[in-house]
Length: 70
Image (cartoon, rainbow, N blue to C red):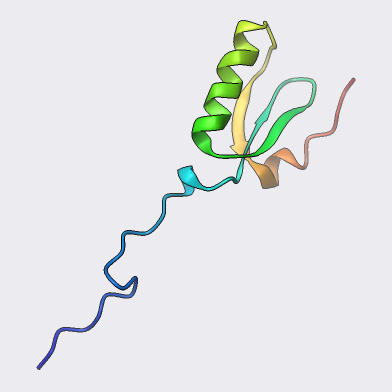
């Protein structure tokens, strides 16, 4: 009797952190979207250095719901 094939053909599933599904929001607006998590973290750090307030990394789905306050 043979063991069943793994559902993913032996390949590790791709992490969502590597997928371009992340956005950065601030208190004022959507700052960037369509980012990998690493790119979102870099943008967040740069904006924080620039003094942008209320920064958060969220999914693009959530980010698309943020309305600009400016």
